[in-house]
Image (cartoon, rainbow, N blue to C red; front, side, top):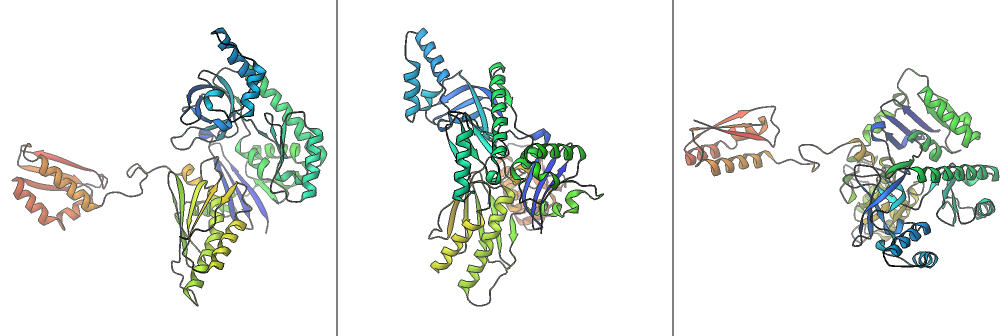
Amino acid sequence: MATDLIINATSYEIRIALVEHGNLVEFYNERPTEKGLISNIYRGRVRRVLPGMQAAFVDIGLDRTGFLYVDDVHIDKADIEKKLLCDEENGCCGNGDQEYQRRRGSGMNIEDLLWEGQDVLVQVCKEPMGTKGARLTSQITIPCRNLVFMPMTDHIGISRKIEDEEVRERLYNIIEDLRPADMGFIVRTVGEIATREDLEGDMEFLLHVWSEIQDLAEKASVPSLVYADLDIILRVVRDVFSPDVDRVVVDNMSTYVRVQNFVETFAPRLKNKVHHYEGEQPIFDAYGIEMDVARTMGKKIWLRCGGYIVIEPTEALTVIDVNTGRYVGKTDLEETIFKTNMEAVKEIAYQLRLRNIGGIIIIDFIDMEDEGHREEVFRTIKEATHIDKSRINILKLSEFGLIQMTRKRNREDLTRMMYEACPYCHGEGVVKSRRTICYEIFRKIARNAENAGGELVTVKVNPQVAAMMLNEEATTIANLEEEIKKKLSIVSAKSVHSERYEIVWKA
């Protein structure tokens, strides 16, 4: 079956689905009102330098300052000479070349590299997430179809997924021959089949873009946006549309024309694979994607064998639990557990990629006594995640049956992007039980009864809480009335949330 890239473009939302053999494997979503910032380049100003965190906060014109870690700071000779000139005016002196070489040659502290009020050119390498601002880097990178340009780095890199040594050597030699001195390039995975002319064309384009960025940065006010990366449609086409993809299908005519023009410029051999969808049925419904997208949000995912996995995202990490569920096996317990774990491995790899789950991930497999089974599960999860474009590190199965892994995250996962915390439970996922609310009300009445006037206490509560108070807690209410010498009236109101209540003291 074919591999399709399906693009649903409207004025209010862009949705892109990568479908392999009839299965949704990657899903991208962007709204113009919440446009992503990844790879955007800003002229920013250092607001605070924090030696204790070896980082600095940089104002780039957003609601929250960005976070620049010491390892992501590019040492600029011009900035150092400027700082030394300021120091000289204040009675100090120094040599710019010597200071540059000293700072470049050793792991420096953040306070040696940046100072408050300094203007810096930075790039967003990780979207703002939750309460955290964007993560920034001053090691600028600019991607194109086949290459990634690193103007601050003297380095040539070849994608790890290009495994043929002869191909790697050919690409390395071409880049070494073409590149300007002291500038770096990485050949992307799709560049494996690129010709010398393709690579030279990309390089000329990237050098032109960098020259424009430098000119704009010199004139830009601080803070301000200097360069915005491609929108999500062209970015996904650039990064995902390869010879392995059979078709790109677009439902919007103007978007279709944009995609065609982009492909004709950067990958003309693939132009015939771009199609305009003209069906009456919405494109995601026609390809059966709408139901798949809805299913990606569930916490519990059933496996074909009858077992299931539970995905629980937390602030610090994501926990995935594997359970046998309805699966009871056919032979012995160890075989049942092994089969469930093996099926779970493939589903977990699929869900990580589909939901774009990143950061630290802990997988709690069902305990296996057989060492061979444990090794097989570990080997299979490494194989299953090999096709994932995000960088993944996996540690071996622990004695407790846990696998610890990390998956590079540079944007929000689907759950955080499409859902928001419940305004009632504030993201806890639970609310107080009805009985807990009952006893909370009883304590409050008992505490305030002596100072409150009147003979009647009216309690307005959710219907479910009211039912418990009038039935299971009827004796408690009678005892409370006798204790406080007042009458309690319970009023049921559908408009009241289960955790809310209102107590009114009447004469």
